[in-house]
Amino acid sequence: MCLGIPGEVIELMADHEDLAMVSVEGVKRAVNIGLLREDGHLDLEPGEWILIHVGFALSKIDEQEAKASLDFLTGLGDAYTDELEALAASDIT
Image (cartoon, rainbow, N blue to C red; front, side):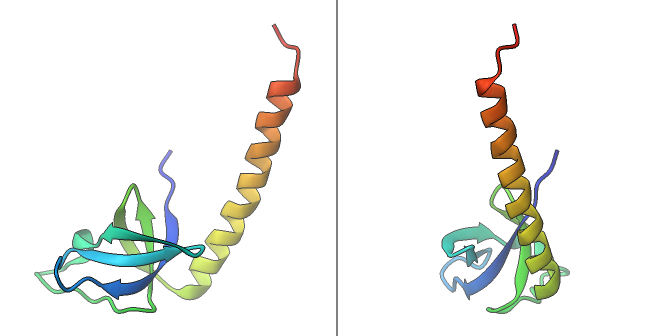
């Protein structure tokens, strides 16, 4: 399963052309944006949203899609945590 996490571009890093500082729910991380280049051109600016997987930006997304994805992942996280707790409490052998 491939899980993409939405993040907001905070800064394009001038000293590393393939890196951007991105905020995911307030946590800032450097993300490789090299895969977003087309013909050597990067169409990305601070304030825009990207979909991230294992430290690489896979695509640009709009803010509405980013918010919907974050809401879904938050809900999924709660369900996943509940499942783990239920499994730990079970007595299945």
